[in-house]
Image 1 (cartoon, one colour):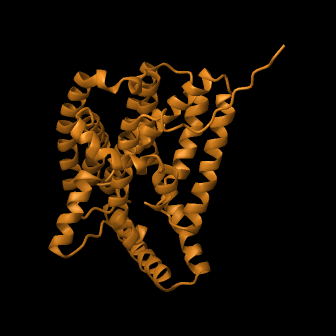
Image 2: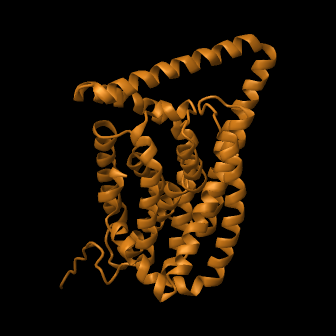
Image 3: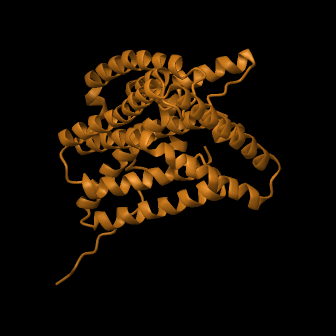
Length: 345
């Protein structure tokens, strides 16, 4: 009796889906665009809602907020979930242990994220992807696409519920203890200004050990944002996982009517949501919940995924045309090397 052993090897060039590589490459370029601002300022600069004074810089700042901020990690999260579904399907076809192999990949991603976050730069998302990947693997891998879509909707609502509850609590506290709340807010703002100055000094002039200590301190603040960001990422991950399970990637050309509807609704909802976000976030302290910051959170929670869906649908439609397929082919090269490129953008 002969026993056949199947191995899951890296995806060959002939097996790859070029459109997905293009989308992933486009998402990486967008993430780089957003992170350019983070490369030049401390984390607390954005927490405090500080903005550039030069008019040209302000226009660029608003453009990045409207067109890019939150949209491209949403795209990448969707594609990460889609990739998980494709990996699972290939594992089943070749009769190899999917859970063990994918867990090994996620663990490697976790190690990359730890090194990146604590020794290179705090703007890491690999840690979050690995955690969400593990949670999805053990909680949702056997769920039907419809169930995944329902949970994605639930997760999108959670940041709104959290922010709404915090705003209501702050409003009630202000009614009962107005002076004390104002004093506490002023103290908190002053603390963040001091942290911003300390971070700028450490990153500009500190030794490697001093910079590393500052990075560890900053990561504690980054983790504090996870309850507001992680559910958005997880929602898009589940959307991508559902799309992969439904077989969307097998014949993208056959989905043109659906893609047109997604592009239209994504554009309309995305524009309205991101207008609310840009207006609400103007000069707002991101660590204090106000009516304006609640408007901004609502706008981004709805608008960022919607505009991300518009971008993905529009690109998938464009590549059906030979001219645009040829133009976007170079972008696919970056998409094929996402794990190499992502930590540095």
